[in-house]
Amino acid sequence: MHYPPKVAVSKLVNSLKDVSARRIRQEFTGQINRAIMHGHLWSPSYFSASCGGAPLAIVRQYIEQQTRPL
Picture 1 (cartoon, rainbow, N blue to C red):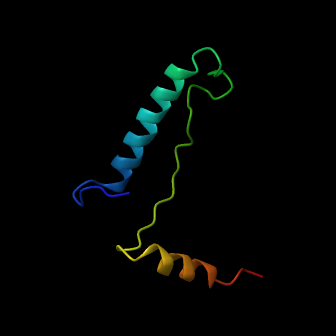
Picture 2 (picture 1 turned 90 degrees about the horizontal axis):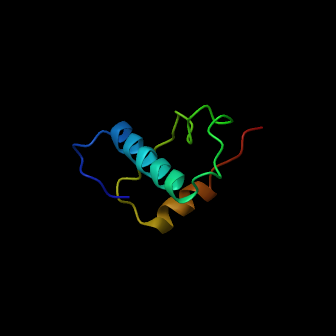
């Protein structure tokens, strides 16, 4: 995903979660039980990572070479 460097990642994620939740609720009105989710569609947490524009092949190779914890 590309976004302006002046935009804080937290604000970007918050906006994406807000818009997607609104659209999902519009599309599936009546099928989503707000009581079960306490009015929230997404968790308040998120994960973000950056690879500095590295090619996907390099990122994939890096991930594949990671060792698993014991």
